[in-house]
Each structure stands twice: as C-alpha cells, then as structure tokens.
Image (cartoon, rainbow, N blue to C red; front, side, top):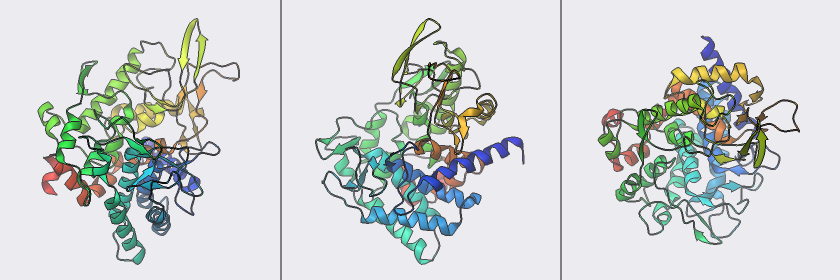
Length: 430
C-alpha cells in the first residue's frame, strides 16, 4: 500500500469513529458536534447511516452491528411523533434540524428542515440498498426505509410555489426562503421528484435551474457557488459523471466537472490571497461552512480583522476571515485528487495539531491571534458530524466508487434523475 493510501485509510478509519463513539445506541441520535450538550443533527444521522455501509465494506464495523445501529435509527423515526406539536420529532414526513440526544424530540426551536431531512432520507435509502439480504432484520430495514421515504410530503413543502421551501416552524409556518439557485439541494429535488406518494412536478426542478448563476473565475467557467460544500454534498450519493440535465447539456459539461472547476477555483483563490491571510497557498485551501474563532475583531499587524464563528464562508466574495476547513479539501478528493492529496499531506506536515481522535478537526485559522493562547493561530475545539461524513464518504468514492455504484442501483435515485431530465452516461444502462 502506498503512503497516500495508508494516509487515506487511517483518516477514513479515524473519522468513522465519530459515528461509532458519539452516537446514542438507544435511539440512533448522532450529535451535531462534540461540544458538551450538543443536540443531534438529522443530517449527521443520515451521514452515519451511509457511513455504516462503508464501515462494513472496510471492516471498521461488523455487518451485524451496522444492522443493529441502522434498525434502531429507522425504528425510532418510524415510531416518533409526527404532528404540529412544538416538541414533536417531525411533521409531514420531515424532521426538525436538531433533536434532543436522549428523547429525539425537537431542540432549540429549530426548523423543520427540508434539506437536512433530505440527507437523512439519502442515508436511509443507502441503508436499504445495501442491506439487501433475506434475513428478517434486513427486510425490516428495507420496509422501514420505504415507509419513511413515502411519508415525506414534498407537495406540501412547495407551499403553493414552484420551488421547495427551506423549512417550516409550528410557531410561524413556512420560512420565507426557498431552494433556488445552485446549492446543496440538487439531491433534494431528485428525491422529491421520485416520491411515490407526494412528488413535485418536473417544472419545480426547472424553476430552480432558472436561478443558476454561471461565472468565470480565474479563467475557470462554472456554475457558481461560493462555499465549497455546495459543490460536494449531493455528489456524496449521486455519481454525476457523464450525466447531464438541460442546463449542463447547454454548457457542455456535467456537475462533476463543475465541481472539479470549483475545487480548482478554491486553490486559485488561496494562491492569490488578496486579503493576505496567513497560511493560504497552493496546498492550503478549503473555504466552506465551518466553525471559526469569532465573532470578534482583532488588530493584527496593524490591520483590523473581523473573525466569524460558525458560518458559510465562500470565495471570492466572502465571507472569508482566514479560516481553513481541511474537510472541505478532502471532500473534493474525487474531483481533483492531484491537488487534494498534496493539500492533505500539507495539513498533516505543517498543522499536525489540527488532527486528534477523529481525524481532522473542523477548521483552523493561522491568522487569528489572541492573548489567551500560547501559540498564534486558532483551532476548532470540536468535531462536526456534517464534516466527518463527507470525509468518510468521499474518500470511499475516490478509492472504489462503492457508494456511487450502490446508489445507481436505487430505483428512486434513477427515477428522480430521469424526471429532472438527466440523460447520458450510466443512466442509459439503468
């Protein structure tokens, strides 16, 4: 095994441990992060369900334990309260963004999140596709997955509009924002189109693509989104290589190539480093949604710097405060391994303190200085499930394509893509 493969193997295994050790085995809840008192995140739960299938393939977990964990999770959501009550787990087949780790009921007066419910459902579908045996437990996984997927009322989530609402709260109803423009909701529309009970019309997908923004940055033409995670999350479950919707057919590329260009744009932004942040270079990049050292303002070398806490950072228009997220670079491994692997090596060699029990911590900021620290720079104190999952999943897609091949066998993914008018590539063989 080469050194780079050994590095990836260790990183994937260490990162996977987050889902093994931080989950509540009694109900399947997975914390949003490792900070004391963190609530569960339904997106992190969906990533855990997906990661378990990879863990079995890699020998990180036995098939029996993965089935037990998966069944516990699916049974909980199947039995959980779906109502308009403020402390229910969900409503209309969707779930609140954050849930209490012990009870699985709504936490923080969070929103009923259509996108985070999507990631949960994607994990449920991955589990159903993987556990395809005739044993009673595996049949139950598939039965529960079918029930939970069919329950989501996507027509209701349209809220009488063309595009899907971002969410709903019992206190005030639907949120004003919708899933429009290029964003992480590409897989949301695929799953909503394929719903057996409450599908949205194909026009909804076209309405979303009408709000796309095509840009040229650093000589790279691509469908624009500033934070890198937007170019990654839907790709965890769907192999977009060689398949195109109407928008991409007109541009002559596919979403995979688009993400490759977006990854290179991130590197070019760091090379130019017009804001003069410490550490930015061809091997140190990755600007996305991440934890940060703020909110605060600090004068450093005569320049007043504004630092943010957790926010969606992006290029080239910001916000950017010098915070680098290693997971963002690693999650682009399938798109551009030729620049991601050197970045991984750089993080390990130059910033070894960023790595701890579960692999890379969320983020670090070499520019930030504080009188309360012995060394210059800032490192996130915790791990986030939404960071850990993409590392495990995208390392596997890079190495073997396992998850992509698994989801190509999912008839709901295939149907959703076809309803969105994707054609070509592997879809022709499905």
